[in-house]
Every structure is written in structure tokens, then in C-alpha cells.
Image (cartoon, rainbow, N blue to C red; front, side, top):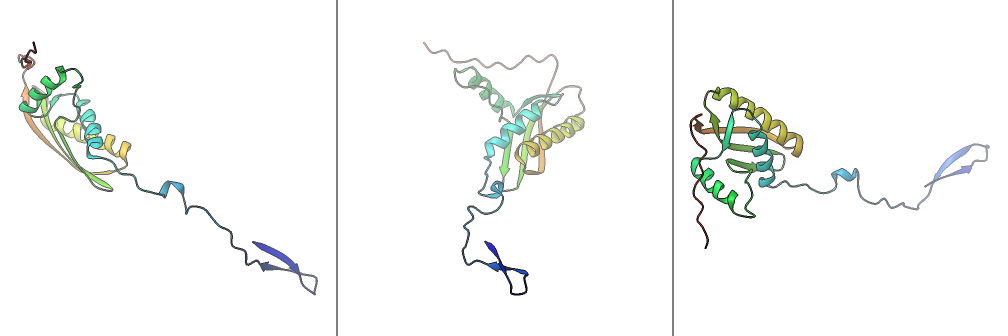
Length: 157
């Protein structure tokens, strides 16, 4: 706190008080503390973004899709949007591995490029993390005449 005192010449000079003012916190409130983002959060964002790309038929390997189809039919099981997605999340960066099934007739390199762009844009926009790499493995091609794989669900009597 600064006070003004009058000098003998009629001028003013600042006088510094010895009282200390207490300031709560320190700096910008947005910088107080840490934010951590779980791998599963990034996997969900990436899975949804990848599925939005034209030419992506499904995510995951055949076995994962089979188990996923069974789980989807179980009440309360719900669809797994993280199927076919693996994320490694650090403090400021993330790396992703995706396994996709593409529709027959599409250019796989074009689909992979579009998936990378969509996934990187979505993850960076929503999390603020830098996506350092998106590795894509194309595990299958869905042919037009193939029926959807519908494994039998065991009946409970």
C-alpha cells in the first residue's frame, strides 16, 4: 500500500507502507492444477471420428467384431466405440493405432488419409493433445455380396 506525504518544499513523495497485502492463489486460474485425459476418452473420440469417414465399414479385427456383435445384443452391453482403437496418452501428446475394415471398391490409401485427418482433427480439437501418429491397419475388405456377420447368441432358458 502506498501513501503520499508532503515534503518541506511543498512536493509529494511516495511513502511505502510496511503492511503486506495477501494475494490468494497464484496467477491465472486456468493454470492452477493438472488435467489428465484417460486413454479410453481418446479412444472413443478417435473411434467415432474414424467411423464417420466414408469407406470405413467397421472397426477391429474379425474376432473383435464377432465378440462385439454378441456384446451389442446383451442388454446393457451397448456398442463399443473403442473397438479397433488403441491409444497411448501422455501429458501433452498421444499416439493411436486403428484397425479398420474398408468397403470394397474404395481406394484404401484415400480412406486411410481421410481417417487420419478426421481422427487428428477431432482428438486435437477436443483434448488439446498433440497427435504424433495415427497408425492404420486395414484388416479386411467388405464385399458387397457379404451378409453382415451375425453370430448366434446363446439362448438362456
